[in-house]
Length: 196
Image 1 (cartoon, one colour):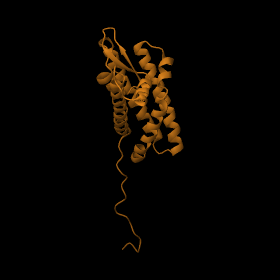
Image 2 (cartoon, rainbow, N blue to C red):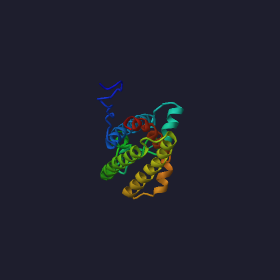
Image 3 (spheres, one colour):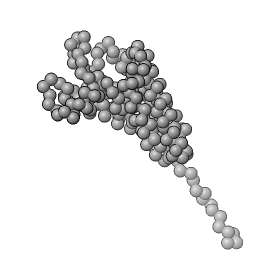
Image 4 (cartoon, rainbow, N blue to C red):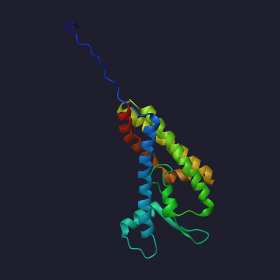
């Protein structure tokens, strides 16, 4: 009846694609957890090793001293501050809430910058997901670097504004956030490929 011609009655359906915002949320949650866990674990080790009488060995103590600084608040509460970045921009809030400690007068500021970190992080990851979909590896890498620089600048300027601090000294302590963010976004390209 079709004279040897094969007619496909069932065309191949395109695979179901997740919306870009959904992919961005998934990637953001994974990156948030990795960054927060790194701060909490290393901060917890530093809190033990930098306490008086602790004997953690020169290597662990040296690393702890380079990343964190113990200090006493005006009320005499022992606190721990991050002095060098080991994660993504703004993703160290659980460290301050549960390990490093926060003075009550700064709690509102911490909650404000926490909200800003989530919003800025989502916008950056979502923008990267949208822009890098379907691109080759070299373009994805360039976009990852560009978005990482934007993430670094946007968040740290926001935090400096909230706390009334200078941006440049803050940036000098956190410049490592740029390659960490770029690598994280580039790895996220694999999630992007799955949706494109």
